Length: 79
Image 1 (cartoon, rainbow, N blue to C red):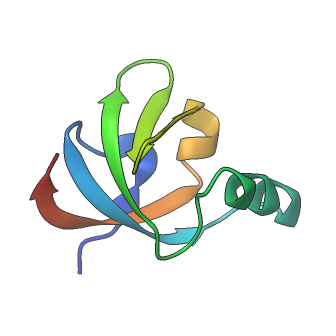
Image 2 (cartoon, rainbow, N blue to C red):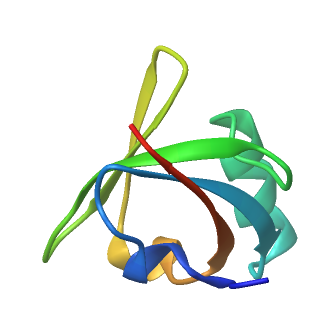
């Protein structure tokens, strides 16, 4: 299985969150935004600054620093 950091994810592809390598405080904050292990997300934009994710009708923007702490696995589908 191919796993990588959210910071390196390709735009317009779907991924599953496999792990969050962060402090409990940050993990709780991400869970509050709907991001947790096992959630499927789409990467809408991944450029120099932030990473914009889509999950259902929700759009979330994460800093590059936080996106490096999220381990994902590609689903092999495009959005």
